[in-house]
Image (tube, rainbow, N blue to C red; front, top):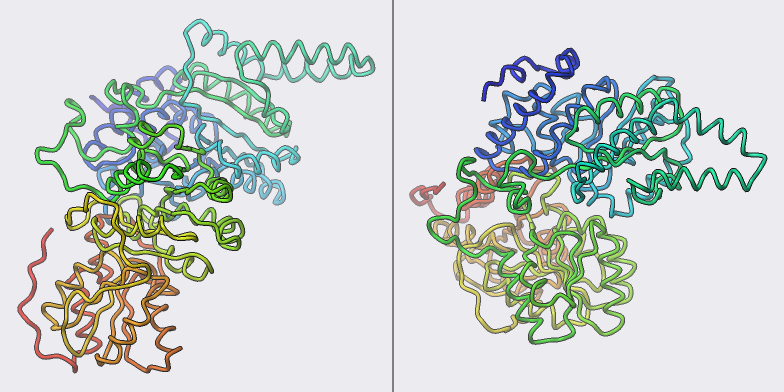
Length: 634
C-alpha cells in the first residue's frame, strides 16, 4: 500500500492540517502499518485494528499533547504511537531497546500516563482535569476505556468521584467492542449522537428545566420522554446517574460521525458543562478479515504472514506451564467435586478454556475484578468448596488487601495459581511477576511453592490443593525444560526441598525454574545444588544441614532480591545464629524493561554463565580455575 498520507504525518499537528475527506484514506494506511509491523514483531493486533478511526478522530479534534489522552490498559495504542512520531520505530515494538507495547511517559509527551493494568484511565484523567482547573489552565482530559475494563470497581469509583467535579473538563470514551450496530440503527445513532452532543440539545434541556421545573408532573413527564428517546438506541442511562452527559452509542469506525460528535463534546467541555461520556462501538480486528473472524486468536499473536494468517508450528512445541496447570485443573476437578475455578477475565491466558468447556457450572469468570475474585473465592471456601484462583502474579498485586483481610486472617484454604511469575519478556515491567515471593511470604497463613519444571508444577498444585490454608504456586510464562508431568495427582512433601547435585564448599539454593541454569553452572563450579521448592515454609532443616557442610551459600530466584527467598534464607540463618557467607542472586531494585525473556535473564546475570560469573566473583578463593566457557544457546 502507498503510504502517501501517513508518510507526511510526523505528529498530530500534521494530522490536524489534513482535509477531513482524506482521513478515511489515512485510516487505511495506519491499519496496514499496524498489521505489517505486528506480523513481524508479534504483539497486540485485534484491539489495535479496532481503534484506528477513534485514534485519528481524537487527535484530529483535541489539541494533543496539550489536551491529555489517557488510554486504559494501553495495548490498543499502536495507532496512537504511529501518529505521534514513532512510526519509524514500530519495527522495534516490544523488542529490547525498542518502543513499548504500552504507553510510557518517558517515551513520548503524547503518552500522558503509563498504563498496562486495566481500569486506571478515568481516575488518572480526572486527576489531570482537576489539576488543570486548580492551575487555571484551559486543558481537557480524555479517558479511553474498553468495555472489559469497565467491569472493574476502580472505574466506577472514578465515575462516582468525577460526577461531583462539575467544572472539570473531562471526557470518558467507552470503547465498546462487544456490540454491533445494524446499518439502519447506525444512521439514527449518528443523527441523535450529534444532536445530543450539540448546543441546541443542551440549551433545550436547560429551557425545559426552567419552564417545567415549577410543575413537577410535567417536568417528570418531559424527563421520561427524553430518556425514552435515548432509550431507542442506547442502554439505560446509568452513566447519567453518575452525573455525566451520556452520548451514543455511535459507530467507532465512522469518522463522519466521530469527528462532529467529538467537536460538539469538546465545545461543551470548554464551557465546563460537566463531565461528558461518549459511547463508541468498534470491532476487534477491523479491516483484517482473519482477525475479525477470530479476534481472540489474533489478540496477541506472534510473528505470522498476513497473507496466510496464523498457522500451527511445523513441530509441536513443548507444553507450557499454563497448559500444565489447565490439564491439572481438569484432572483435579474430576477427582474432587468441591473444586471450583475463578479467573479475573483471563480464561485463555490462564489456560482455562478446556475447564470451562467441561465444567461450566464450576467455572467463574468475574471480569477484570481481582479484588472481588479473591474475596469471592474466600466466600466459596467458607462454605466448604475448594477454590482455585488462576491469576497472573502481577494482577494479584491488585488484591493484596483481600488476600490478607479476607483470606489469610481467616485461614481459608485456596490455591492461587500464579502464572507469569518472574520476567515475562515483551510485555515488560508492568506485567513482570517480580514481587510475589516478597509480598506473599510476609503474610501469615499463606505458603509459596516454586516448581522448577512442568512435573513439579503439577505435583505442587496437588500439594497446594490438599492444604488447609492459602497456597500460591508460582510458575513462569512459556515452557520449561520439558520434564514430562506424571499422569496421576501425586503430591510432593509440603515445605520440603531436595538436593539435586552433591558438590563441595559452595551450595546453591535454587527457587523455581532457575534450578536448571544453576545445575549447569554447578557442573563448572563443583558446587552443590538444592532445589528448595518452597519459599514459604522454608525447609530450614535442609537449609541448616547444607549450611553446616558448606563454606558459602548462594540463593537464586527469578524475583526481587529485596524481601525475596534469599532474604528468607538470610533470616533463617540469623535465627539459627549461623554466620555464613551468603550471595543472593535475583532481580535488582529496578523495573526490568521489555525484551526477549532469555536475553533479559542473561542481562540480570541469571543464566548459567551469569550465575557462574557471580559465584566466581564473590567466592573465587573457594574454587579452582574456571572450566572452558559454556556454549551459550540462543
